[in-house]
Amino acid sequence: MSAIVIIPLLSILSVALQPSGSFIAGLTWPTNPQWSNFSNAWTTGSFATLMGSSAIVALGVVPIAVGISVLAGYAFGIMKFRGSNIIFYALLIGLVMPYEATIAPLYYNLRGVGLTDNYLGVILPEIALFISFGTFWMRAFFLSTPRALVEAAKLDGATPLGILSRVLLPLATPAITTLAALFFIWSWNEFLLALVILQSPELQTAPAGLGLFVGQRSTDIQGLAAGALIITIPVIVVYIVLQRKIISGMLQGAVKG
Amino acid sequence: MPSTLAARRPSNPAVAGLWAKQKASAKKRSQLGGPPSIPYLFVGPAILFTAVFVIGPLLQTLWLSFFEWDGVSLGKWVGIANYVAALRNPQLLQAFTHSLIFVITFCALPVFLGMVLAAMLSRQKLRGLAAFRTILFLPQVISMVVVGVAWRWMYADNGTVNQLLQLVGIRTTTAWLGDFTWALPFIAIIGTWVMSGLCMVLFLAGIGKIDGELYDAAKVDGAGPIREFLSVTFPGLRQELSVAVTITIIAALRSFDLVYVTTGGGPGTSTIVPGTEIYRLAFRAGEVGAASTIAVLLTLIIFAVVFAITRLLREEQS
Image (cartoon, rainbow over all chains, first blue to last red; front, top):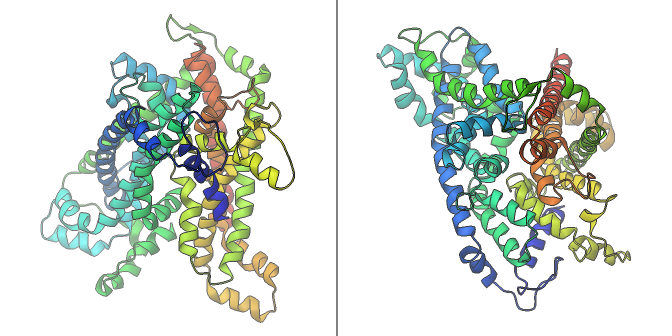
């Protein structure tokens, strides 16, 4: 089973290491592996630029989306207010909705305010898409925190924001780390928004750039393969470091409210 | 959400004592001090983002689906003409039929494989199960664009798949993704590669939560592995099963990235799916109204599927 999962990834590696100009697509370990294909993809291929764009988008998305999710999850988990159920379900639409369905209006709206070909044009919609899951995730966490802690802090005269920042946030670190890791992976892999909104090559994110290169039937197969592996490295690193959290986060997140 | 509660159980014994009462009263949370408008300030940013970038555009899509609009000039109201045209359009029917095939390979096959694997693995203590889990879950975190690129070369005329076929005596140099007959099933099966690990990990976690006494009781009754699976494991996995089916069906119906990168819908229209049609019509063909119509239909189908599964699960539980 593991072999079946690994073979396509090994195939990319095998292609990436072939001498340039060859047309070997199969799993054939080259006699003289060309590790320089990786540095070439980084320097002459534009993968360094693409990675930079992806990093800017992810750095914009992750902290803001986490912050908004924590605030909303706190309100839904700890406070009682009118309309909370309806608002919560409205926020959950983003979890289920295929966002292919909103891409055309999004494009025209963003173009109308001059945000196409602008990182913000990708960052803002991504935040909106992710906080649906994030609110759901943080609400579940706050529902599970001991009520006595909140009551005690309240008796001490702490404000709602004070209870959140001094009492609950220290407990929430593991839940927030998981959320940030998932947001990072989703943002890094996001394709359609980047493809539609960011059209100048120097702004393209890594998956969109790779997708375009492949679509253009580039002849530099080795460079593409090396690039595909390079852009996967950040996600793999995060996955390996936080794999338990990521796996359980993805599984639990799937258990919708 | 029993899994979340269990995972977040506090380790501090003093706190854990309060925990049991806590769970019961979780719904009856009273208001914190301060004016009643405070909670709205906390959910405000979330509402704002969702309204502007999710619900607003979704309503706009619905609105646009009643127009003939090329994205440049003034749109023309055409009522339900786009829907009538869509339902009569054989190409669109083809796209949705392809989605159905994806449902088999993204959902039915992985759920079956995942269930069999999880049931087999759970019966014995295996070494290296954690590493196995990590590898099987890997396709879930890799970009579908990279997955698509990898499989393009797997399916090339001199690719790995043909090399493997040669090992079993089938000599062929078919470029599978360029073949009108084979391109669709070969893309569809990538979904099985992506989803099987997810299903297995989900079911393994579910089996871990089933009360061990039920298995002991089954043993006492002399149940064999198959009987045990049918009377203990399978009923215990109801929740996980519905989750697995929901995620994989949504992924099957959406599947834009994978098709775009592997074939772009070709050759001809042999691998088009609703997602690629929305993209092509809205951004290549200048038929934003027709694209919006497909988008509305796709959204309705996905909402209906999610609603049906949630409903089924609730009925079974009550």
